[in-house]
Length: 343
Length: 241
Image (cartoon, rainbow over all chains, first blue to last red; front, top):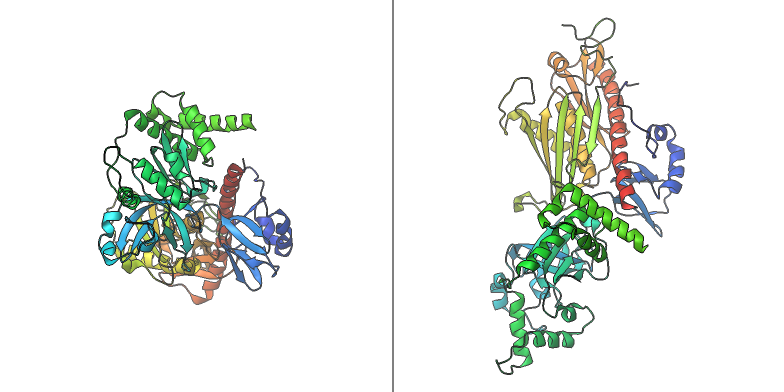
């Protein structure tokens, strides 16, 4: 039965309208295999009728044919066929460096919002507690969990594993992870964060940034001597030595290494901010707006781009004016231009 | 007032098998929601915003086996010709919500998102017939934008019977004077995810009404698909720069 419909005339899209596919479904199945690298598929669309492909995320299998279940681009890895959605929530993967916020304190665990479909779990056993890295967790630790981390606290952590139901388990068993202080929180779309070896950077102007893979960003004042403690390669003994040397106070006399470690560990969970000078506060705000501008322009966020954006933003005297639409656009344009210059 | 003239024209000048102007936009509110859409079906205008899948606020909302879909509908006071205050728990709205939740629990792959909730917020800005159809189409687009896995599009359209002639896509004037059937078609198939008939219709005429409804649903699906592809290609081109 025919239907009359009148629509506004539109310019022809590069992806030809779907009317054609309707008439020759048999052929389009074959055709798509070649062209699917660039074009997108929509829910219910036949991706392939070849049963050799394994069915990955974003697909479903019905009557020996594989259909797409989301709108996105087809990805083929060896024999695995999956459809990557255009948008969607962050999906945690083992090893991701993420920033999160505590939402709940439960029995032997914290629930952490990391922008995932479900809240992640941080077990009491997978955090560093005061009094030695490798000590057993006692009942008293369980009772004072709120003294370490309470609802609303921000922390950075690594995804340890993914449970079968899709929720993530985190750990903070390294000196670079733990509670966050002395800074400001910012959220960008997780699709914009480019995965790399390292996600915490020291930026010019005495500011550090942690760009979580989940799109949660933490901008803070750099720690004194942070360059040595944050590097991932230092072994445990080295790390302990570093923390003891930074926490060393002349005049207090010599204290044993373990005692110092304990003190510095308690310091990890402190809620007090250090004093932050006005100029550092300004720089942090400037970086905040630069990252916001990059997200506005839908540019991937990398250390290089943040620094280039920061340099471009120096043309604006007033930090507050950076959130104007024109300013954001011009910063993005500057970043793209200077990237082209470097090649 | 003549709803269907002997020459075959309806009150707004359409033929019996003619759709009203259908416009849709996807990803209209990228910062405030995971997925969003806006549709215009004639003068009916609906905004849809989808949040989730996300951790439920209350424990009672979480189901260990599948996602919970929660739909809330707000109908603006100014959406009809006379201004009217509407209560949130009006009986009609509660029923509409239940119908929609049942429809989408079948079409969305809820099993993939256990212990989560998918919150769908609907705002009806203007209504001119085909309210349920418009809301269904808006939710379909919103869910696609949010990247939530679905078996296929659910495209919905209303159809009525005037004397012996089936009419497609009724407006308010027509809806008030004849029995209306709203259907939700799954993709390009002839399967229905939604079927709502609030008054009587002769059984021997039902088939012809259903047939024009399904054909109309397929057309709506194509129009929505076009918009999803347009938006998708736009996004891809931005990523590949």
